[in-house]
Image (cartoon, rainbow over all chains, first blue to last red; front, side, top):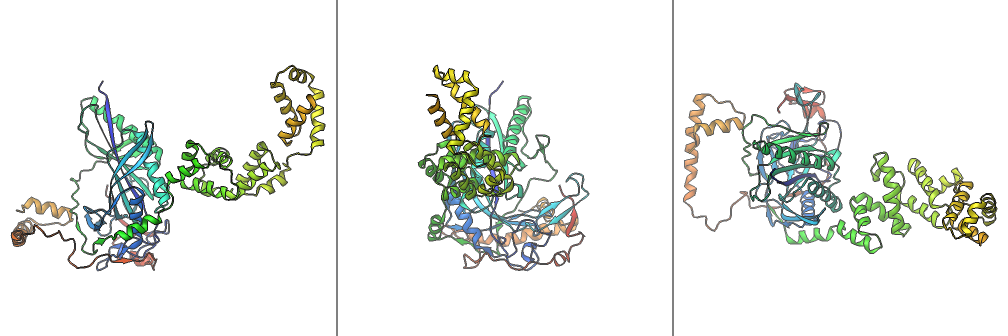
Amino acid sequence: MTRYEAVIGIEIHVELKTNTKIFCHSTTEFGGDPNTHVCPVCLGLPGVLPVLNKQVVEYAIKAGLALNCEIAEYSKFDRKNYYYPDLPKNYQISQYDLPICKNGYLEVETGQGKKRIGITRIHMEEDAGKLVHQGTITTSPYSLVDYNRTGVPLIEIVSEPDMRSAEEARAYAEKLRSVIQYAGVSDCRMEEGSLRCDVNVSVHPVGTGEFGTRTEIKNMNSFRSIQKAAEYEIERQIEVLENGGRIIQETRTWDENKGITVSMRTKEEAQDYRYFPDPDLVPLVIEREWVEAVRNSLPEMPEQRVARYIESGLSEYEANVLTASKEVSDYFDQCLKTYNNPKMVSNWIMGDLSRLLNSVNMEICDCRVKPAQLADMLKMIDSGTISGKIAKTVFEEMFNTGKDPETVVKEKGLVQISDESAIAAVVDEIIAANPKSVEDFRNGKDKAIGFLVGQIMKATKGKANPQLVNKLLKDKLS
Amino acid sequence: MITKADVEHVALLGRLYLSEEEKERYTDQLNAILEYAQMLQKLDTENVPPTAHALPMQNVFREDCAGDCLTNEEVLSNAPEREEEYFKVPKII
């Protein structure tokens, strides 16, 4: 059995979060009734003139800097000609040989530590429209077209073929999304299609320098499916080669339900895009002052946040988990504004909050508990108003209702008993009822005290202040 | 040299239907045009950077401010075929 090595490269299209389209003033707002976010320019009516949205260039430069790229001094737009109904002009305005950014890299965490994945180029282009089918694309008798998305600005980020496993491919895609989000150029919502990945996969026998023939996989709408699709494709290609077959260069689509990739081969001839400079758009000359101004406006990047979190006393693991998503990291920072105990906040975010969010499949930005409310609850634990154990119940109620912790504690009668005489009475009761455990403890069995504390907490429905219980119990037993 | 096969290929890419007679005629005409443009090859362009645009202009931008869009009725007013708020087109896979 030959051992094979996989080679993976990824192209990611990111929709930029501008207000308007790349070459006209139509809104980029997601949704909206079909064919209502369009104007003569994005419809490609005769005689219109596209004019470049300055914000698109600024965001592209920003993404390039965040990904350690060189920013071109001279760049231009080209026409990519092809015939498809989602493209009203019959060409897409894109960038061919002078993209705005090139030669960058991204560092990802892999099983073997940090790895640098090269970024070949980033170019600007316009998105295409959307085809809608009654039933599925294969059974539908015709296509319906909605041009709302036509002309929405995209950047395409092309990686070097530097990944060697499906896990690395996923790690790259996740890290890239995080960097783009931190840079603030896109909201990267995969479910809305504002981040779309195409994965190129090939395999070759270990030890041969030549890469194998590659296939391109499209239509993955989560990081999990990127990994799964790449895994499947690597296995499939190895099997074809092992059986004496050869790999055909083709585009394949990921079938989420069946967990397989399927060929999208059509009878059309090889694409011939006939690129040429778009005569409607004048070239870009990007002054270094502009690049520096954009560099200075870059917000804190994930690596910088990780360093800041470790400085504040968190472990590297915690820092990495919290910063993996910008929303989670922002939530954490918001909590610290009014309750400066990073460890405690991180425990609650990574523990109860994550668990509850996952249980209802919710993102943190839709969470009813606001950071200030979590901070208030943690303060109540510190002041002894509620115990850490009761806090779990309080927090779950806050999560479900969005109520303030004070309100929940009042409504549910969850205030901690810190009245010494009240607790002392219960302690006496439990001591009298458990002579065996008392004797065990006096004979040096430290475990016995745990049992007694448990009984006292049970008797007070978990409301007794645990520190006080421990103190009173030890006083009475010694 | 442009061949008849080249003309057929470009016609297909542009979704143009050409008769046999037109294919012959266009092959000759396109070759004549290219031959005329060949004169440029005689120039010494050793130290001339490639031109991407004929105008002495650069960096023409617009601000990112929204303006009015067309109504759905206006958008579809030239549609050969429509269904509800959509353009209706032959299915292409």
